Image (cartoon, rainbow, N blue to C red; front, side, top):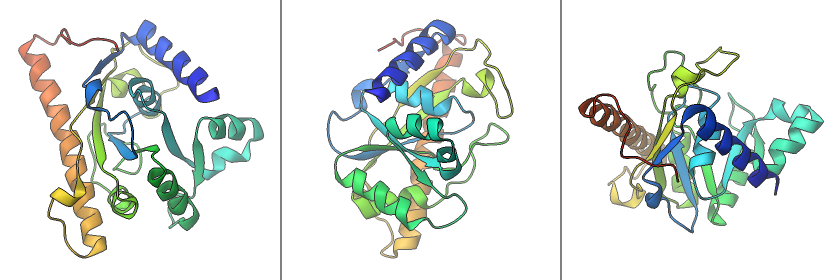
Length: 220
């Protein structure tokens, strides 16, 4: 219940304040576990992706956020679970795999953290490892506009259009990955990030052809 209340409030805010747009929503599977992977340049990226995705999302949140009882309860009620960053948190990994195998959708940013420059950074192997461990595909998505609306370090939101573009599902077993789990994890992570980059490049080309307009899309 809390998840839907928060998601609907955020989506309404994004629509009214930023002219929120969603593209490729039909590419999101209606059932089954998968990882939703997006670029990460702003605190607005998780709300934008959650608002755009018709499926309920689950999140890995920094463990210190749960130190505050009220905040911990709110984000826990919105399907978040703690992870200790900068170390191998086996408990968080097991929980992520458990949820994915139970048909849930887990939001992960392949870069691991927000980009300082706004440019997409190198992929970390974590997303590839989780996909292979849980045996689930990955859906790439590109978030546009959040770097201008609320860049890293900003304390307020600018009135800039935010859009989410969903790509095509990535099936790891079709990629010819290495038999070595570590190498395969990095290969998969690199492939996912490459698809996210291509989504971003495609949107830039299309918008340039339309004179910078995002016309043709729709709020869904």
